[in-house]
Length: 102
Image (cartoon, rainbow, N blue to C red; front, side, top):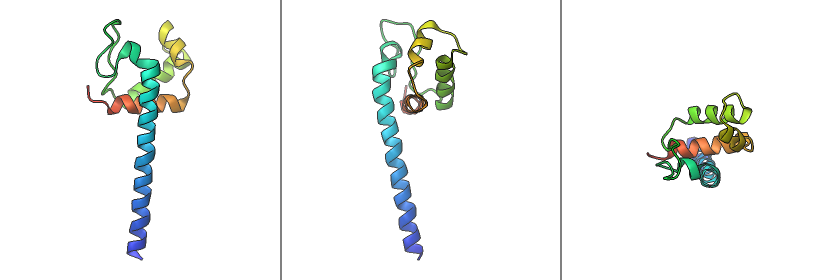
């Protein structure tokens, strides 16, 4: 019985790890398409003076992006860019950037 219970726990952990990887992969793709032109991945783009997002706190990034999307935090550029992001996009992007070492 203990062995059977352990197998179910292990299967659950493996499944959870797979979905996190998918979120990081989706976040990486979305960040490359939407964010990295200005913010880069580890360093800001050479053409723009925007802060790098790699290694930032995940919760801070989610909050900031949602505020830009909802226009409670004002930046003409960021309001326009974040306006097209879903909650899932924001979650994936924040987790991806949070996982990157600066």
